[in-house]
Length: 57
Image (cartoon, rainbow, N blue to C red; front, side, top):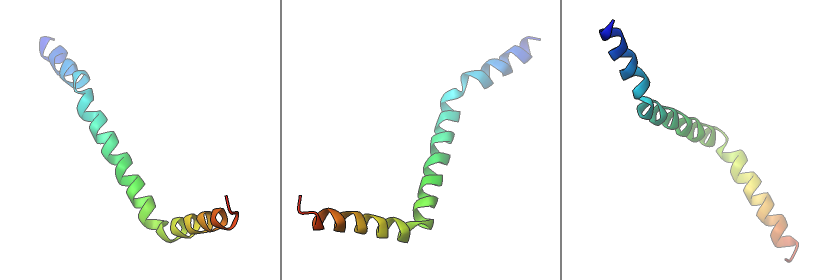
């Protein structure tokens, strides 16, 4: 019984490692989406800045 409690405590106490894994996965997804839609993102940004430049702010 004591052995089971020790394992549960270790699993529950290791939340910091899981948070790092989650952050790493989210960063990897963001990078992948950025690479996949790179041309669309660049076109959008160029269009927005072109419209802002044409508006003579």
